[in-house]
Image 1: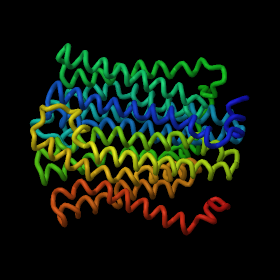
Image 2: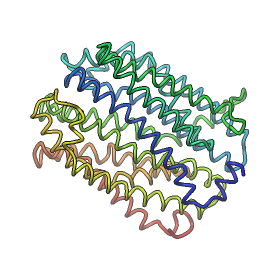
Image 3: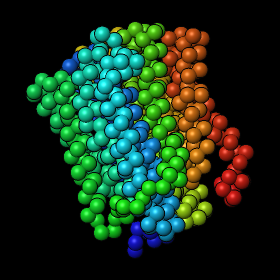
Image 4: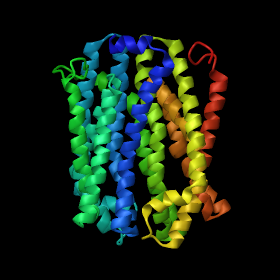
Length: 447
C-alpha cells in the first residue's frame, strides 16, 4: 500500500496518532534544546547569563519563524498537490520553498551580524547582560542557516509520509545538544559561547540525519530545475503567514514581557520570567506538535476533497488538545517549585519564589492554548488563511498587548502572570462563538 492510499483509506484515529506521537516527540525535543541551554547556563554560568541568553532567544526565533513561515506554507501546498495527484507541482513547491528560505534567512543573518549591539539593546539588553547576549548570539547567527534548513526539512519530511524520520533528526539534535552542553560548559568552561556551540553542532548533525530521506526511493522531495513562479511564491507566503505569526509572536511576547517585568520588578523580574519562559517554551511545543500532526493529514484530505474525514480529524485534534491542556495545567500548578528547581540555586531566593508563584498562575493558560493552536493550524491547512491569521493575531497582539498593559495597573504586579491565561481564554471563547454560529456552513456538513 502506498503512502497516498494509506492516508486516504486508513481509519482516521490510528492515522492521526501515527503522526501525533512522532510530531509531539520531535517538537518536544526541539524545545528541550532551549530548556537544556537554560539549565546549563543557569547552573554553569549564573542567573545574569541566563537572562542574557533569554534576551537573545527572540532574535534566534526570528530565523526559526522564517523557516516555519516558508516551511508550513510550502508543505501545505505540497500535501495539497499530492492529494490532487499532481506530483510535478509538489516537486516545484518544495524546490521553491527551499530556495526562498535560504535567500531570506541569509539576508537577515547578515543584517543582524552587522548591527548586533543595536539589535540586542532593542530586545532588552543592558550593560550587565549584553556581554552574554553578544557571546551567545554571534555564534547562533553564524550557524543560522543550519537551524532553518533542519526545521524546514523536518516539516516537509513529515508531509512526505515519514514522521518518524523527522522525529529521529530532532532526537539526534536534542541528545547531542545535552552532551555538547556538558562538555563545553562544565568541562571546557566556555560559558555561554559553549552553549551556542553545542546548539550549532548538534543541529548540523541532526540536519544530516534528515538528509537520509533523499535516499528513500519513495521520497517526493525532489529538487527540479524549473520551479519558479511568482504566483506560487505568493501562495507560499500567504498560506504560511499564520505559522510565521506563531513563532514571531513568541519573540514579540518575550520582549514585551521582559520590558514589563523590568519596569515593575527590575532585573529580578526579568530573571524570574526567564525561568518560567524556558519551561513554557517546552510545554508550548506539546501543543504545536498536535498542529504539526494535523497539518499534513488535513492538507492532503483537503486536496483530495475528503470532507468527512477532515471534520473527523479536527474533532480528534480538539479532544487531544483539551486533554493535554488540562493535564499540563494541573501538573504545572501542582509542581511549580520542582519545575523552577531545574535551574539550580544560583538565583536568589526572591527570584525563585517569584518564579514559583508566577508559574502556578501562568499555567492556567494551557487549558485553552491547545484548542486555539489546533483551530489555527486546521484553518491554515485548508487554506482558510484569514481565519487562522485572526486567531493568531488575537492571542499574540490584539488581545495580548492591552491585557498586559491593563492587568498590572488594575490588580498589581502579580497580575502580569495572568496575561497568558486571560488572553488564551478569551481567544478560545471567541473561537467557540464563531464555530457555534458557523458550524452548519463552515464545511458544508454538521460537526
